[in-house]
Image 1 (tube, one colour):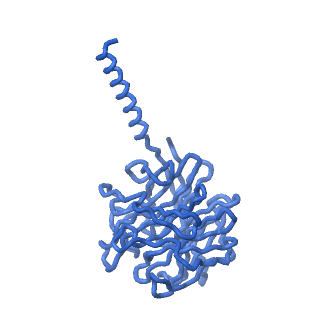
Image 2 (cartoon, helix red, strand yellow):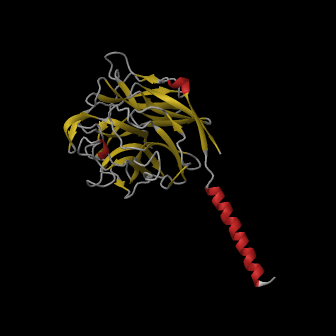
Length: 346
C-alpha cells in the first residue's frame, strides 16, 4: 500500500472518529414537564395566626431513611422580619404533613454583616455521617431582603432540634466587587469525606435601582470538616451573556448526586433580579445541567426545559421517584409550593 493511500485512510478514519465524537457530545437529554394537579400547591400556608400563615417558600428536599423531608421558609407577615424555617414530611412527594415542632429554627441575631437582629432564612440541610443534622443558612439584608456576605452553620440531633448555631462563619463572601460578594447556600453534600457547599454568589447592590442587581452565578466551596469552607475562585455554573433567558444570571440551583454522576436544575434570568413583586419580572424558566464530577457542568440544550409561568421567588427543590422528577417551586410569591412533574428522555 502506498504512503499516500495510508495517509488518506488515516485521515478518513480520523474524520469519522471526530464526527462520532462530536455527535455524541451534542446528544441532548430532553425532559417533558407538566404541572401536577393544575399547579395547585402541595404545601400551603398555615392557618391564621400560624408562624407560616402569610408565606411559605424556598423548598429543599432531603431523603433520609425512606422518608422525604421538605425544609421551607415561612413567615407570619409580609417582609423578612418574621421568617423562620420549618419542615414537612412525605412518603410519595405529593402529600406533605407539616411537623408539629415547627418552626424549628427562628433565632434572630445581629452579626458582623447585619447590625439588626434578623431571622435566619434559606436553610440547606444534610445528615452527617454520625447522624447529626446540619443546616447551612443565610441571614437577609434588612434593606433589600437579599443575602448578606456570609453563610452560617447550625446542628441538631434531629430535624426537630434543638438547633445550635456555630459561633463562627462557615463561608464568607468575596471582596466588594467580586462575583460572589453576597452569597446564599443552595446545596450541601459529602463526597469521599469532603464537604461541598454549593452557593449562589452576587456582586451586590447599594442603591434602589433595578439595574444594579448583578449577575448571580453558582459557586462551590469545600471543607474537610464541614465547619469552615474555602471558596473556589471561579463560578462552576456562570451566566451566559449571549443567551436570551440566562444572560443576567442563574440562581436556585437544586442538585442531585446519582450513581452515574450529577444533575442540576436551575433558574435562568434574562433581566436583573428584583426581589419585590413586579409584573416586569421574568417568569421562572428552568434549565438542566449534568456533570461527571459535580464540578464541571454541561448545560443540556439551549432552551429552558420548563417555564412555571410564575414571577415569584426564584427557588427550587427536587427529588426523583422511580423515573419521575418532581420540581418544587414557589407559587404566587409564597402563597404555596407547587410541583412540576417530568421524565428524562435520552
